[in-house]
Structure formats: structure tokens, C-alpha cells
Length: 350
Image (cartoon, rainbow, N blue to C red; front, side):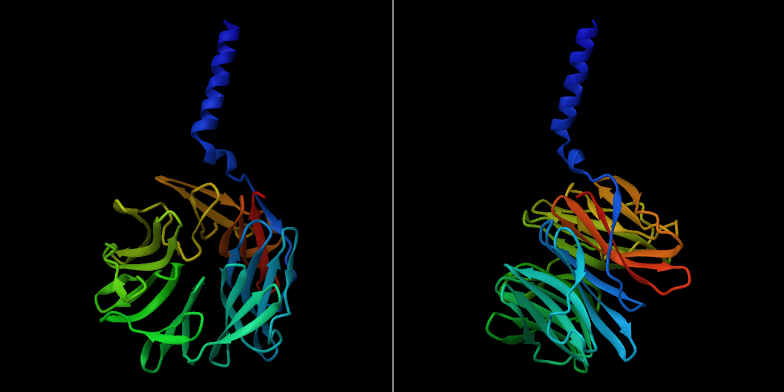
């Protein structure tokens, strides 16, 4: 009888491992990653990873003469500050970072103008953005194309680089401005917009920008759009019901769209990523001042985890997340009592 019981127990364990592979790779706890300090207060703008041995984080610090760009590279064992890019010691800031084949592309703003920093095996080069905008809303790049969106005195501007030069693209009628843009390929690009009738999702199919006819919830905003190689699209945003904001998530594929409202309150979804375990992860407002907090959304189930305790911290804010191989990486700021916010980084798994 005891032998039979042992066999049954073993079979249960094996079956659980077979039907639940994601559980086996789900990281267990967040650990701190040391980051060289910048001049506080520091602002984090983006984090992108290409596997476990390469990740880049961007932002800006506060110098005596204004804001200056900060760039940090993770090489698989340490995060170090990179000051080798052109104009590293000049005023300005670094915005979104993207991987294009084996290159790294970063949008840099300074003195009202913008340029794209490109890093290859041979070093850094600069691709100027031909038009000066009074606000640069977002940037994305894929092999064969890059986009910069923003506004100037004449309104919305969509600037596209095709590998040889820049062109200005027209948005559909009624679009006031674009809040963000992301691309899967040079002919599959998505943007979230404010229009005369509310929020909308636009799509570039290689020929023109068109309304993607996504059935967004009424009275809603869009914070981010995640495009995946499988064709799945995930949208994160918030909607207002009786004046109260509530986070929603939409997932779409060839079968249609599904909307859920996980218990996240009014959490912003700008930093949402899909983790190595297949779940959606995003930072949330922490109820413990000395620890960060993250939400994991897997279908109808939402769970939470905390970052490591930081002594004397009064505010820990993860600003960006990225999948780095089998781990998740976080980059943000931590305010220690008596000082201004400075950089912090954490990792789940790895």
C-alpha cells in the first residue's frame, strides 16, 4: 500500500511539472542590482534588454547647469555608466531605447532638438532628426524603419526614417496627437492616439495610417501597447467610471479582443511587460515605503511581490521593466531619508 501511494505521489508531481512549465521558470524573489549613483534627483525614462547579458537604461540627472543624460549598460554581471556616446557631458536627456538588429538606437533630446544615437560594434554615431518639435512624444525603431512622433506649433508630426532619409506621414482625420508608438516590423506599426471622439488605436500597414478599429472601453486612456511575434497584442490603460480611474487590460489576436479589469486600482500600465513566465508584469504603488511592489497578471489571477528592503528608504519607485532572458529586470529610483531620489535596480530570477 505504501509503495502504491509513493507511485501515485510521484505521478502527481510529474504531471504537475508537465502541465505547468511556466511555474517551473517563475522567478521567486527580487534581489538588488548595484547601480553607480548619478546627480540627484534622477529621472528614469526607459529600460530595454536583449537577453541576460545586455540591457540599457536611460534617463537624466540634475547638474548645476541643468539636466544631463545618463546611460547605464548591464553586461550580465554589473551595471555601469556609459559616457562614451557623443555629447555625454552636454545638457539634455535620453529617452526611449530600442534594439535594431545588433545595434542600439536611443532618442536623445537637447536644446529643443532631437537626434538618434546609434551604437554598433564600431562605436557610436548620430542620426539627426530633421525637424525640431516642442515636444517629442515617443520613438520606436525596427530593422528598416524608425519613427519619431510629437508636436510643433502646427500640430501633430509623424516622422519616419526608411534607412535613407526622413519623410513626414499623415495621420487619419480627427487625430489630435499620438501618445505612443511601437513596431513589430517596418510594415506593422501601432500607435495610440487622442482623437476628436476619444482614445483610438492606429496601425501603419506599410502604406498608410488607419484606425485599427480596436473596441476600447468607453471613457478610457491607453498607456501602452505590447506587440508579440506570435501576433498577439496586449493593450494596457485606464478607464473612468463615475470619476474614478480603473486599470484595464485588452488582449487581441485573430479571434478578437478580450477585456479584463485586474485588481490594480488606478495603476499606470506604461511599464508593463510580458515576463519569461508568460504573465504580464508591471510596477504598482507600494504600501511599504522601503520596498518596491510589482503585480503579476496571469489570466484571471493577479498576485503581488515586493522588492528587497532598502534601509531608511521613504519612497521606492520602479519606472521601467524589461525581460532579460529568464529573468525580469527593473530600473527606477529610491529616495533615502534626507536625500533626493537616486537610481536603483532590481532583478527577479537570473
